[in-house]
Image (cartoon, rainbow, N blue to C red):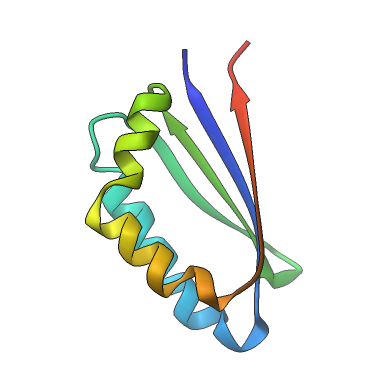
Length: 94
């Protein structure tokens, strides 16, 4: 069973460039984790402040392990404050 996370993000306009750098670094490191199957940073082609993170893990345990990594903790501390909003939704494969 896969654990799929969709995070809809709105970046404060003045923070787009810095946030993207931090988010892509987090994604690159997450893809190296054993339980991470996919981690995408997707940008709305008409609005660079609208982003979706699409993450696929083996299971909830793998996602919990991801949340304990230094790169994720850095992302939370440095990148999340640059956002106007952040909404998470969990999915399961049928």
